[in-house]
Image (tube, rainbow over all chains, first blue to last red; front, side):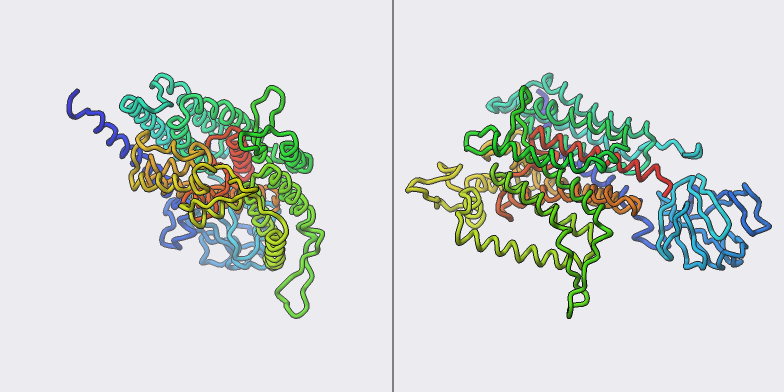
Length: 152
Length: 461
């Protein structure tokens, strides 16, 4: 047998290969965990720049400039409210000036009510103020009388 | 769901499963090489004999992956690969220690029936609802099994009744089922009672709440009955797990202030029970040996009953098992002796209770640490799932927490016992140890978790 493929060499190589593969596995697991936790650990600067999501108007409420079926593009952090400094301005009379914000953490969309007067609803459920909540694609968000649907 | 849902492919899971398959192949290759060098190993076998069980193993991993992909589940891609990697490591050690027969036993009694259960739960995720509806009958059956075993069970060579033989079926270790039964029972009961239990304020101590007695009576009754049955079987490890589960699920289920009182009462009762036992009743010989071995593994002191030494490892002294485990860990060192080059066969029960010692010896502490990290990530994933489930689903969330704590407490107790950081009790290490019924129950629990993942995934909060 050639010296290179000596059985002891093979055993030694195999042993360390096994260790290497298992640690590669662990490494990928940890990367996946970190990606999912990105926002929750790192704060603002780690926000992913690309956010795959849009909001479609399902019911325009009291805002005469909104059209039913209109679509807004979302960025990784999008603020919604009646005030002009919001990313999406909704001038419904029941919407507070800083009403809610939506955050993409790399995996999920989160909606947070910013202490609005009339509340933010996912489906029928009213969100607790300042508590971010996961929202899944095709769920509806209601602010004041405006109903929005999350699209991909 | 609307048509806007992207067809998700579980890419991370696929990559991790590929690595798991590579691990299995390298491991088999190493084993085959080893058997060429060391012909003295009695479990020696050819590569051809290993190919079929190995391919069944890998195919079963891919099968669940495909099922989840077909169901368009996008979430939780780490749970299944971690379970698979642990299964592969366990199988490699079982192959090495017990030969092809051991591996087939594990596959036929644990893996394949378990795979069937996982398939059913993935495809019919609303079956969790049936668990809730029939929680009482299910948990009573789970409770009846160990009681029946304690009375009718088959005694093994040491006179301990652990396994129940039902007709033509192979004997099953029933204590595995009672843990899941307790989880289901407590989850159901806490969900049912949760709102009613406010607790009265204790005068003087405003922050403390006294629970009303009625809320922990059914759970306590369940635990007491199960404990009696398990003590009848002298399966003290399972008793310990039940106690951990009871406390963990009450903690998860009830208000923290209430829990402080429960813990105080529980500790006081445990202390009282210990004192009463100490002064009146004989502590079982097994437990006394375990403590003696924990305090001094090298001691040769024996317990004498009627002038004769009593106990299981009479010939080698009470600490024999732990001594051998310590030798094995020391022999393994950092990178291990290599699969098949150590001598874990000197450790009694190296294939089941002491599989972690065998792993440390042959694969080294470097992989031992990786396994512990895997278990920790597994627990975190399960707890994360419990947190992300909608708040209204108390039963489902408690089910997750119970399952997570069952797996983790067994790892904790067994690894601690193996390294002599803990008095030893007999339990299986989840997914690693040999044991058909145990693996079946773990697979069932994974099935329940994968069903719950879908419930979270498909729900528009």
